Image 1 (cartoon, protein in one colour):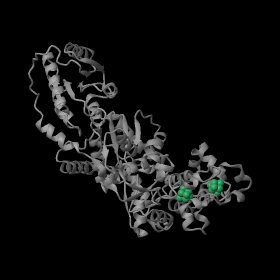
Image 2 (cartoon, rainbow, N blue to C red):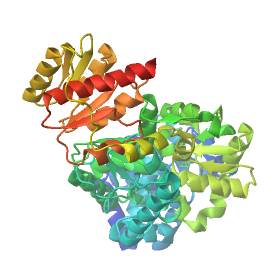
Image 3 (cartoon, helix red, strand yellow):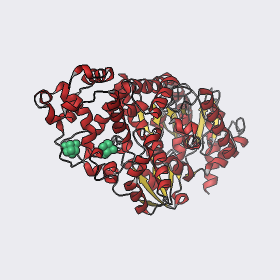
Image 4 (spheres, rainbow, N blue to C red):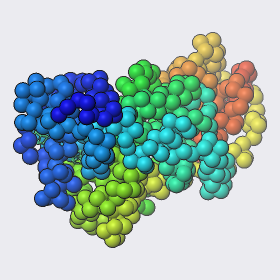
Length: 592
Ligand code: SF4
Ligand code: SF4
């Protein structure tokens, strides 16, 4: 080996390698004892059992040689023993390395979890990819996708006007489906509690997943928005090994969510997008985020558990199985939430084997779908995946990853399986029960400006024996309402915000709730939705007492039965008593 023979690119790669030697990387570089225990973990090995170049250790050895030659004493003393005398020298050698690291490994990390020495081959393979990408050696597909993500801001090169047109189109479809425009998809709604980031594949090829997610947010009464910028939660930097691209891509999403002021960034179903955005890009970009990041799988599960949406699993009665995305499951530990959700929205869920941490890659991971030149090898390696799928007897394979949707669809087509691929958002949206929708619409249409009742009563204590919960953040308003109700014979409970209101309503079961809308923390609109969706409080009459100027619009936009009444502030005390008695009499008659 002579240095003068080395190509300029190799020298740059060696310099770059020295900057990437973290403890985790060095541990994997020196840890391999070439025992071969990881070999059968790899789908490429299973499809090519007699080819030693498919083994995880062979792939990792390519970067290991560079390390041994430049950083490890064994490379100086025994270069022939540790391969340090076989480092790449020419640009042709780099092309071979490109084919190994991009074409024979999907960075699935299945070998990683089966290595007794804790060697993370996928990390080393990504490192090699990054070294190559840095000197411009990469498959054409990786070059194009990376360029789009750098320059246009999303990896599919979707232009801003096309993206916004697609959102409009989905809003219109929702309006047609529901018969009203209250589920319109918001864009850049400042102060929203949730920002929703998607995979550009949704905007370009599968926009109805956006519509389905919007329907679920609407049904849950969520305060959410999509964003005109920083909406691509995917990150090609994870696949190409380019930490710079990885950092910038994540930063765009974080900055937009911070600008909106959202409490939570919900990441649509995408394994590598979730891993990059939630876990990796904060490090690549050095960003401190002050909001929660969660997968939409967790969001949908939460909505069902909290009673915010109702689902009918019989709608999805065919047999389904679940494919764990390598990134969402093996790399991020999201195993049980999708299964819990699946059992709630389907009636015949069949596990695939092996599953969870041991599941096999869809073979489209690691950016493989963008590298056409390796498709034959990829599909050949998918034999084990096809066998897994077939053995379940399912007609639908569900996965929480857009990348896996494409990878699995290719496998199904190539191996002629009788299956289709769906995501959890499809099954949740399809099984949504919206029985209250018509009722709410009718209530909105019929709701009077303010119900007219007699403002005087002959009874000394018209609310005697009644328990009233007064919810308002202003002390003087609460005090006023309390005094009026107590003078009318009622027992009065007080709450200062939506959280207290729900806790007290659940525990005390009042006969009537007066509810302010504008309150800090959980506001009245959100609390009203929660009260209506909880079977233990849904029948408690609610009278909105508000100074909120757009009250009618806000409160009737809920997919829940309308409130029994409302009064605008400032409230006349006689009217308050008479109106409350009127609501309670109506409730009593209804019960009788
Ligand atoms: S990566 Fe681990 S399991 Fe695989 S050959 Fe090396 S030491 Fe053995
Ligand atoms: S990361 Fe996956 S594809 Fe790559 S060598 Fe390991 S098992 Fe094979």
